[in-house]
Image (cartoon, rainbow, N blue to C red; front, side, top):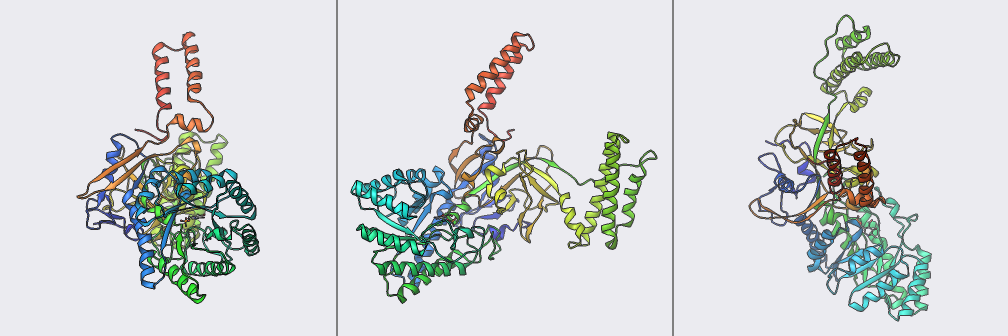
Length: 624
Ligand SMILES: Cc1ncc(COP(=O)(O)O)c(C=O)c1O
């Protein structure tokens, strides 16, 4: 029997399944008949050499998503009778890690897919990949002379590098350098659409968006191109409406507006061949299938059909040849393929099951606290809560004034929690969710401390309240009895997770099993492949986690195809301007001084140095 309190069947339906033994299974969406692979077995295997936390990248999921995007567009093109092709372009910024890019290029080769870059560093990554001859490298972002030069020169190597004009200043630079090098550029123009999208990234769209040329500047750019005999180089129109677009209607409206610009630019005389619609294809993190920030109200199939249908209608109406369709879906391509797995290190339990025995010496208020238990009822719940807090606060004042001692205040705090838990239980049993006390009691959830850094591994959860599904990877056949919030390993009160995707909606606590002493209990955070790996920071100097790329095989087997050891302490020290050899030297001189003073023995000196050196070479996270 399984208890899908986590909604795994909703958000994870193509990728995850609870196994009979209660562990989480990884399905292979490329080979649906294959036996699911037990995720705990992968973790056990990794534990033989490394320590959690891990990012586990499932290469089959990446391949599947690349196939899905390309095949759905190709199918829509065929069904709708669109007279040109689809080409995907992967935006490197969404996950730049070398193993990810290597696999993106490998799996998308058969579709002649390209890459999108937004900086010089990303351009270098793109130019060093073995793309097919027909693949494009689309260069967005602000470009300096070096960026423009390298892009232009790369065309000599049979690489189709398209410089997307982001501003008139940039166009002047492109004209100057292409004249200097005598190389005709492949040009794109980034247009600013007026349609405003909803969701978290709405500022990427509409009049106030920072990107793209507004109408008046487009006409200026076209005039300038014509004057410099470069209009014939303008082959691509680019626009991007923002990431994680929740509503399919917005995608339709936006595509329609992009078409109008495309048709007008063609009418002006530019030989546009490609319509690049940027990113926007969202991920249904909650599995709700709704137009909400963490969800989307459309499927991949619908997304493709809506775009192709809109394009065909508009271009046919204007009697314009159908251009090649490009999209730059990064989030949808990589999000599903990475899972963060971490272990629970400790628990802070606020649920006091037994009440301390009172005696005559105890303060009267303590017995008043206990008497509250006699009048807990529906109509007096607020009164009970007020009384309990009043007595506890008064007793805390007495402690601060030295009128009661440590063991007395400890008994008071325990009694407080005991009574408060009884009030909470009553509120839950009677389902008094709308009672103001209910919201105040939320803070009473126990805390599970996890071996991960929110800032390093889940930065969007911290910064923009992004939701990722979280679930245990074992015991899914046992009903979770506790409700907790999660705390990370950093010493920061912000390192908390207190919003969870569950089967019955978004909740403030995570149902979880009791974790016994010395028990290894793991949680998985899902769909973390997009943006999280490089946006993360080094708060408290917790660095990159260990990473492993896994390939799913037949008969419940798997292969670890690549392992990337996480940051060592020496590495994170170097990011903040420390040389580990210098740090070691200073520490070593200090121990020698104490040894010479006879303050420490030779054995102690050696022990100190041995431990210091081991830490320098060690993992930044908690190790067993
Ligand atoms: C120009 C451009 N293309 C593509 C993307 C990726 O979009 P998505 O996150 O929707 O895949 C972005 C990200 O915002 C972008 O700025």
